[in-house]
Length: 421
Image 1: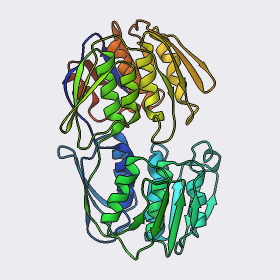
Image 2: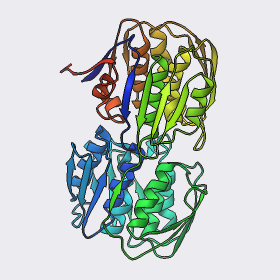
Image 3: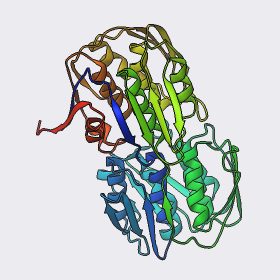
Image 4: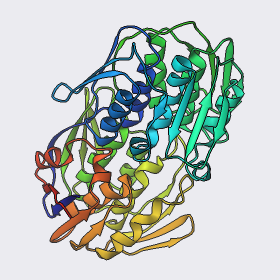
């Protein structure tokens, strides 16, 4: 069991080095398996648990993978794939396993996803992935605990996404890249991470146009080749460190090539946080009281649902009432009860939350319900009086690399502990 122990009261000051994007590197590992020759090199790889699971999964299907942690580099040789099975012991813990399906279909003619039952598809929003495979000519056999996708060859088609999911868009682009003919994906996701994956696939020889427009066209090619690619910085990791500076009344310089926080920056500015661009460095400073905010989550370029939980923590420390409307995931408000244990005043009504601040937070024993609520509780601990102990810290490790040492470098009193219980 992993837990984080945080003692609040220290303003964060210094330089934070932003990790590579989790939501870009995972589909890139899947894309590397599309190549039958050569070795793919990925740089600026975040050393997070989801990457470790992706490496395990790639090795399980026969790829040879080297993870060089100190260099934050992955080297992937997928010249021999030996198994179409994505085993349950990994797939259950790693939702991104679906990103390996296109490579297995093209390379081995089938993909067997264990541990993901049909009853879970709708709730996990994965059903349109498999519907997209069907439109491209695959046969999908949905069992109680196994999904078997078979295809002797995929053929281009027109696909429409009911919601512009970044994972769904990336997945179907990969499937279409080696399909015969032309595939059109309408209502495609617009996230920068999708564009980064498209950039890598284009280097590999894919013919993709329309990225960032919501209307993507993919002309199938015969083969793709191995390349070297540098993963873009993680906007969510950067947003968290910006919020950490805000709630501790600190000053932090964010370093990450091409870093752009988008709408999160504008919302924090409305709350009283100052941003200054100094060349390639983004400086974040807050030395006054925080103002309340209204937030409506939406698909990109709207406010990211993944940053809604951390922003709820910031709102709890703002003077006045903030309103949050969650439009993407109904399970995002699990944080509210944990924050209230620490003295916050958060009221949830369906898809809306009312946060009445500023309320002083006091350290307590709390539990991370998911990755985003976990990192939000770390932020709460930084601002709280006394000690906060966050259980289920493994969930935080899924998305943030070396969190404790990076925050300690800024002056935070935070430790990561492992216990047998």
